[in-house]
Length: 430
Image (cartoon, rainbow, N blue to C red):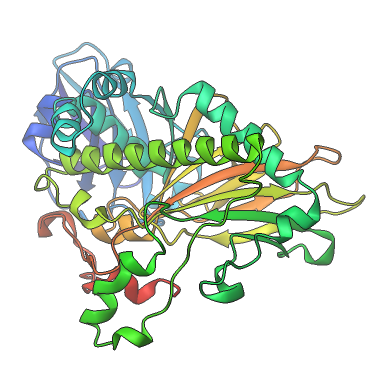
């Protein structure tokens, strides 16, 4: 099937440039960059679906560019079909995800890894052999910066169990929770549990419980090489964070720790899977992303948003992009998360979806991919009155502090300003 695209405003045919020849032949999901400067065509066999990115000069898609989704049903059965692309001025009506977060089922990858030994080499082999799934993950998260994943290592029972124990934690007596304030390593700056107010002011109380890698005495061990390479004397290196667990002498406290650590470990595994999928879909050197995350310097945050007073109608957490490579989120049915649709510049609800994990691309992935996988701004807002307390569990996957952050994508894919190389620790809070 030969497909030609015509610009609606000028009538000119658009040049189509695929990610690569192998990308066209290996997956049913297509993303194509377009330019008004030349005319060409190529053939595809249905069924297929793809995203058209229209730009004035063939540069990669940005917020001001128009986009359109197509599938094989869009085209007639004639030998050569022509469809029309709108000009950038109509971008607001052409959001590629139509205000719906896309979903990808990775059951085949999860099952294959569960049946194996779990080594990095085995994970890489399993994921890279599922090239079509890798391309679907890349295309889906690139469209809006968020993606629902189904049938991940975070099983239905594990998700339910994690939300249950999060609720248990925040319902502990205040004096029990206050014992988790600071742990003698770094003082209040490194509190495991804390309560604060955000954009909503004094009426908007939020509780948080933060966990780092529990396999080390403190995160200082994970960041030592970064500080030494930066010229720090060892005695001046910050003490780092360490976990403090509630009620360890009780049966419930022990079960809480066991369950939350199991969730943390599965999130780390899912991070490994996703980074390998991006390496595969972007045709990068195997291990080039995963090797930047070997120390597992990640953070897991349990968070509870309390019921708001009558008449409260404010933003609870202001719009921001995550200082992470990937963020994995589960939340209860209350919801409140919104993402900024970068094509229409409007806010879109991100509803809770039972048994799915929400994946968000962060700032580090934006830079490592040469902005091919942009980080997406998001916020938390007030939902309808009496919607109840909101619970969320967020896993921030972050690179090694001494990892070099720069565009790993071939130059011909990145026609924007070159991203200057920096160490991840340069932008991380101490």
